[in-house]
Each structure stands twice: as C-alpha cells, then as structure tokens.
Length: 184
Image (cartoon, rainbow, N blue to C red; front, side, top):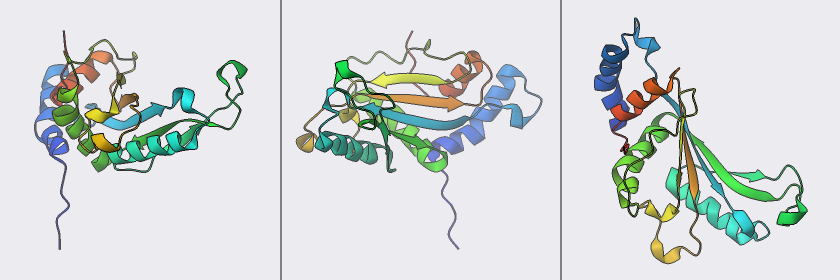
C-alpha cells in the first residue's frame, strides 16, 4: 500500500506554522488557527478578445502554470467602446485547493518570484481587511513551466490567496510562516 505524499509546505505548516501561530495569537484550539483555503489565478486577455487563438494560448499557459484546466470567463455586458460583445471570453481563471494549491505556492515562493525583474518583495498592505491577500504578476514567463521560445504574448496575472484568518495581522503572520517574501 502506498503512502500519500504530503506537499512540503503543508508539512511545514502542520509541524511548525500551527504552533507558531498559537503562540503568537494565543488561540485556545488548533482549529482556530487560520489556514489557506484556496488560491485563485486570473488572467485577463485585454484587447485580444476577438482572437480565439490568443484566448487558447492563455488557457494553455495557465494550465501549464497551475497544473489544472482553467475556465474561460465571459463578458456579462456588451461595451461598445471596448468592442466587446456579451458572451465573448475576456479572460481565464483557475481555483487551486489542497495538494495542488500547496505545490503551486511552493513553486511561486521559491522559483517564480525570485525570477521577477527588480523584485523587492511583496507589498504587505495588499490585504482586503478580511484576511485575504492579492497581488499581480506582470509577466507569466517567470514560471519555469513556460517555454520562452513558444511564447507569442506575455500575459499578466492576478494571484488571490484566500485564508480563514479573521484579521489582516493573522493572515500576514500566516503567510510569513509560509516564507512569503514581503518587502518593507
């Protein structure tokens, strides 16, 4: 019988992160300790809405990055100024949970973010007030899964990390426990 392999970051959280957070915030129970619920990756297509090849290229890129099939997001309303019709795909998104989420966060922190040009750390003020954290990446080619030669367009993407923390301070301590590179 094979043993289920636990991702490295999840093991770090279970072994060290929970006890550190209990000490810092004096929780009464281990179930009170905040955890990361999900990670949402979002890529907007921009002016390339009418070109289906560009949308399929974005879908393929996000699938390589996340390891999961993304969903196309469609326009809810027509906007004439942007040459946008109702029902056209305007972006792609994917929601990561459990094992895939921890493996993505590990690759993001240790491989992708250090490859960002002039990287000075993440902004520690990008919390929403409810313990969720969001930041943007200007170039999707920082991920090692993307082959530079096959890239025709460079896409930006949003990364939203949803936590069960009640306050931003708890969420910041949680993410620092995962070794997120926060700047000043």
